[in-house]
Length: 367
Image (cartoon, rainbow, N blue to C red; front, side):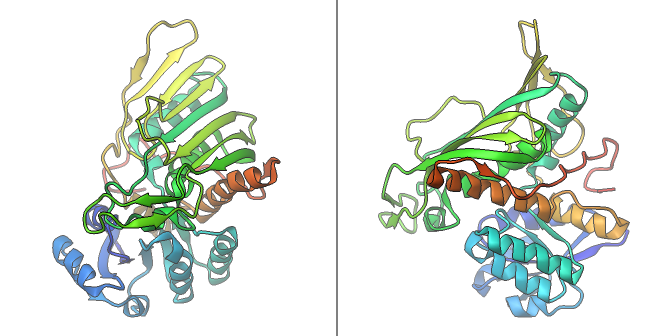
């Protein structure tokens, strides 16, 4: 079948799984990779069999590359996305879409002006876990959804990540790092968000790196590291969401629950693709584990660009859309704005939740 040529910009830690999976999806041909550190790009190209290593400018100037996968750090997302769009490339970017709402809107407007597609991680909602949960909700397994709880409780990343500084700089923090997974899953399951009430804080003014390479270095904390609040959805459901890097002793809170008029649904960690998915109907005394839908239960990062390529080949909308990513970006800032102002943040954007994946499609082939 026809393939779409893609190039990856940014060959850091997350790039490996994209490079591995780009080789699996029928719609993708990974033609080149680029990084400011060419030695890092060469190392990844050799490891994953990528035929060409080049500078960012060379990759953007290649007329055969149709989609750029932007895996740079968040602070560079907008700059690289805009350069790719102006070079005539469709763009898929790691989360978040951009650091600021203004940059996010500029990316969407540039794509519209140039007649190009923009997509963004997270793509974990393609996974069998959330797809199964979505089907159960649509089938009425828990009645009408009325509320949800979501918790991402962590001690932060300085103890394991080799370069954790950006997690504590502008565009970092638990909401911008992990919030996209939880917000995207909630939007997939409950629809777009209407308004937000939030409060933010931070436990430490600086962090000490304990991972190797930079062990002992101290990092100033420039962003909130505990973000909590409530969301009201356009279809009236209300959710509680906490994202934190300030949980130093561990937590037993479940990642995501959806509560309906006739039962409760336990949704797996939205940073994963698999299960388990459990539900308990009103009056039942035990949880029922639902069989996962066929599909993507393993780490399938790269499915977002593959779906974009399939959309280009088949003339349909892509699921991990720029509009969805911007709605998530605005919501993340909504928590901060609400905390700063002491008022609800009223969402200005909306989006259409992604269409479910067809249950009968071939593995690594997106109809």
